[in-house]
Image 1 (tube, one colour):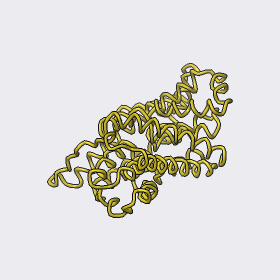
Image 2 (cartoon, helix red, strand yellow):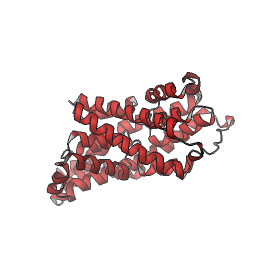
Image 3 (cartoon, rainbow, N blue to C red):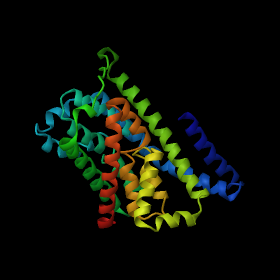
Image 4 (spheres, rainbow, N blue to C red):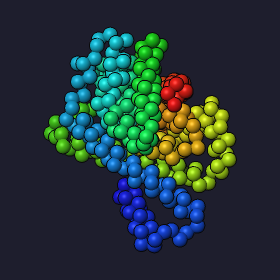
Length: 311
């Protein structure tokens, strides 16, 4: 993160001192896109990770267990809506879901919370509103599609999930003598480093796509509705951009239709390479592959339907 901050500051300072870039046009375009994405997204990224650390340190993890209905079919939609209370990196949702299951929360409800918390929290929705300024329908579509995907996946698990697929590891509680501020600091460092790194990767990739990939190729994929949705959905899996920053990356891919960019923002916080690895390490590989594949299909379907309806 220190290198990222110094690099961004150096680029901005060099641009100001030189009165404009003296390099080739492609480098100027690449730098402009990269800096714009990172500078716009960093405040939301920082705010989200701070709130996530506050919740991890000062809010009891068992509050959902006391608030959720005992019937899993009722608990799933409640847990999905409760995802608004956990702003932060989607990496945090996996250990939180693990703790909830270990404390007696129905797995279907915990998994709905796992999917919704990084996708519909206020920080993500505010970042989406800024990235798509003047298009409130995109914020509404993202909220509805993400919530619908989380609830549907929770209900599917309640109906078809098998206990042998879900093997949560035993988590050690943070020692009481370490103190809540120690938990806050360690959580903030973890989320900020991970999310910041993935933001930079997403910014680099988006800038590279804007510069290196011919516009005709992107326009060709963007011109076919079904293909464009699948292309950006798969790109979201590969890029693994933090949910607080993915709206800015999606907004930069303006050649694609709104439904495809909606799919990018819905799929990313729920299915990407880092989340698949985290789920496999926490719940087992049998769960991770099945759950990720099903979530991808449901997210693409809901994005397509809501994108066609609202956008």
